[in-house]
Length: 184
Image 1: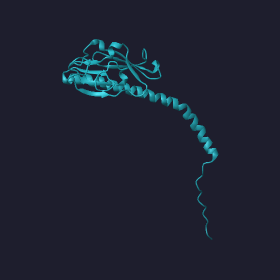
Image 2: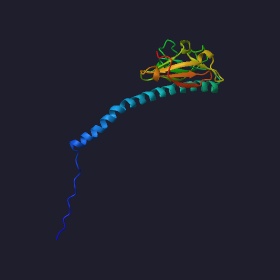
Image 3: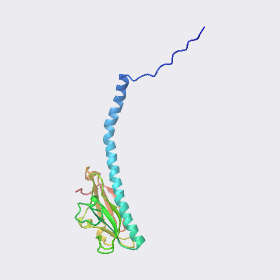
Image 4: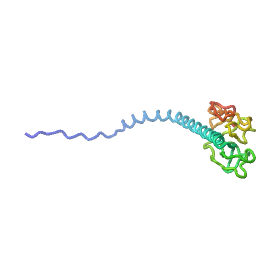
C-alpha cells in the first residue's frame, strides 16, 4: 500500500477583504500622523539654521582670539562683501579678517567663510535695526562694540509662536529661546 502525502498548500493570496482591513488601518494613521511629522520637520529645519548661525558666530570669535586680530561677520547677498542693504541675514553672510574699515570687506581683508543663506521661508533679523550691519570680535573674544550684542529673531511661515529669539552676549554666547517678539 502506497502512502499518499497531502499536497503542500499554496500561499494564500490577498483577498479584497484583506486589502480593506489593511487600508482601514493605514489611512487613519497616515491622515493624523502627517501634520505632526510636517511640524517636526519644520522644527528641525529651524533648529538646524539656528545652529548654522551659531557656528559662524563661534568661528568669528575663535578666529579673532587665535589670530589676535579683529574678525567680523556681516550680512551678504553675494558672499564676497558686506551688504548692509540686504533684506536680512537670511540672505547669507560672510566671516572675514577685518583690518580696514570696521564692518567692510576692503583692501587685504580675507574671507574665511561665506554662507549662501538660509533655506525655506526663514527670516533672520535683528530685533533692533542698528545691530544689523555687522558683528565684530576683538583679539580677546569680546565684541568690539557693545551695541552689537542683542536679539535676533528667527522666524518661518508659522509665525511668532513657533519662532526663536537668539540672544547674543558681548562674549559671543548665543542663547536660543522659543518665541520671538516680532517676525518681519
